[in-house]
Image 1 (tube, rainbow, N blue to C red):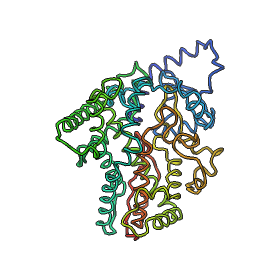
Image 2: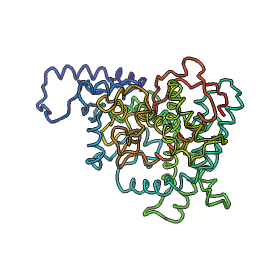
Image 3: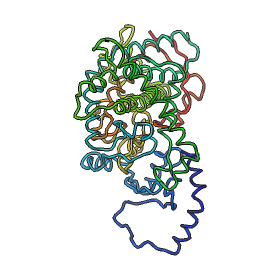
Image 4: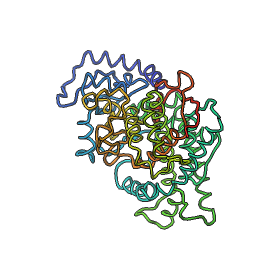
Length: 475
C-alpha cells in the first residue's frame, strides 16, 4: 500500500494545492450536522494518507478522537468505520440486509472472475445461490468430516519432518504453510501441487489481494495503478491462475471412475454442474471462483491464526504448560490426538479464541458496501475486555463467548449474512494441528526474533518474522 500511496500523493500534489486555494475562498453551504464525526481530510485523497501500513491500528487510534462510529473519505468514497460492539451489532444484525453488499474493488474483481466468488460477489440472488452451494455441498459438517483422513495424513507428515530434524532448527512457519496448503489442495483439487511454482502463484495472489488500488477509490487517478505496475501484476496472476484451474478441471472431467466417498470439491462442483442441481447454469468461471475462494481465503487466514497461536503460547510458558498437560491427558500415549477428542480440550479452544481476539486474521473484515468494521479494535476494547492487550486464555474458560458470529465482542470471521461460511473448515485444522504439536513435542524458541510479534499486512495480518524452533519428543 505504501508505494502506491506515495505515487498517488506525489501525482495529486498540484490538484491538492489548487483545491486548497479554492477552498479558502469558498465555504461549504451544508454543515452536515447529521453525519458521524470525521477527521480532517485532504482534497482528492481524503484520509488515505492517514492509514499507513497498518490501517486497523490507524483507524483504532483515530476512533479514540472521533468516536466508535466515524466517517472517513478514501479518495472520493465516503466510508463508515465501526469500532465498538454496539456499532458492529447495529450494522451486522438489525441492519444486516442494508449493509450486505460489497464495494466494487478492482483487484478482487480481476482475480476472482468479476467477483463471482462468495466473499466479494455483490449481495443478491447469485450470491445467495453460490453461498447455498458452498454451505450445503462444500462446507457442511458431513463434508468437513469426510476429509478427516486428509488432515490426519498431512499432520502425520509434519510430525515426521519435525522428528527427522532430531532437535535441530525447524522453520515451523514454513511447515504450517505447507500443512494448510496441502490439506486444502487435496480437499479442493484431489491432490497436492508441491513445488515452488504453485506456492509462488498462491503467495503472489494473496499478496495482491492485500494491495491498495488507487483506481477503486479515485477513478480519475486509475492511471496510478498502471504506472506502478499493479494492474499488470494482477492481470498476470489472474491469467496464470486461470490456466492452472483450467488444467485442474480438464483433469477432473477426463478422469475415469473414482470413489464417490473420496470426491474433492472440484468433483462435487462438476457433479452439480452436470446434474443441473441449481436454479441457474453453474459455469466453469463460477467453479474456478469458488475454488479460488478456498485457497485465497482459506490458506492464508488458517495458517496465520495457527502461527500466532503457537507464538503466543511460546511467549507465555504457563499457557504452554497448561495446554501441553491437557494434550497429554487427552492423548493418553496414543500416536496422535484424534479429532473426536478435540471437543474435550477446553484449554486448547480457549487458547485459540484468545489468539483470534488478539490477532484477528483480517482485522477490518471484508468491507460491506462502504462500511469497515474494525474487528481488531473491538476485540481490544477495554470496556469489553479486562487487560485487553494481555494474552489470557483463562478469560474464555466457563465463558460462552465464541467466534462464530453470535457474540459481537469477538467477530474475527464476521457475522450476519456475510459472515465467513468456512469457520468449521478452518478451525478444525487449527485445533487438530495445535493439539498434536504440543502433544508430540516440547518446543523451544530459537533466536530472539522468533517471538517478535511485529505484523506484516496482506490479505491477512501475518507474523513478520518466521517462527524458528527446536523440538524434542514429549511422549
